[in-house]
Length: 242
Image (cartoon, rainbow, N blue to C red; front, top):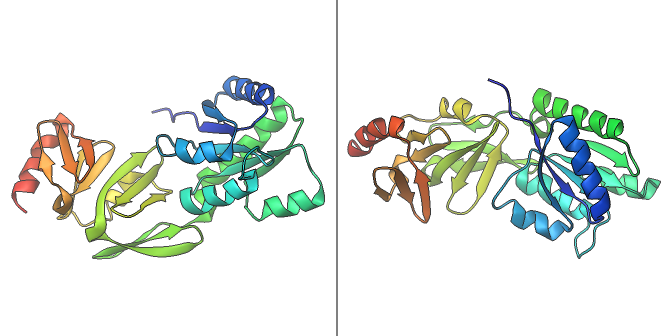
């Protein structure tokens, strides 16, 4: 099966430049996840949609700079960033490096320069996973996952459900979500089968957290998750045995 084209979010407050970048990306075969002018807009955008890469201008209008946003994207969302800037002085570059971007493009840049920066970024993601992180450690009752630069403990009993996002997997708990740079199918094989059950190609639920069930969905707290017909029989058998 052909892998979907990486999706790229453009964060640029000069709309003419943003439109040109969008045209370049489309010509290069990438999916444009959106164009946003302010850092604050990105955080609300991520609540509904997650891109694979963020093309991020360093100088943005508003209270948050591109560098501020890049730190947050890395630490809280594990998102790869490619910086765009018209200011290539040493001080700006030194400050930008602290956010550990995958690449750095100085404006104006052409289509080929953008293509090369993105090709390097995609290769790094494929070869290393995000930021070189290793796989999570799954024990009998807990999983240790990366959150920013640290491994943190997540008790399996606190996991509500898992959600597939392209080649990533998001762990949803009542208090916080964690994004892992591995496919959900890989993580599924590491989880205790007595507790977790797939209900859809994109969802695995903690059976002990299920509140309601109908013919086509599962309710966990305030979350209504779709259940496919192909997984319903196995789910119903498992839920009745708890």
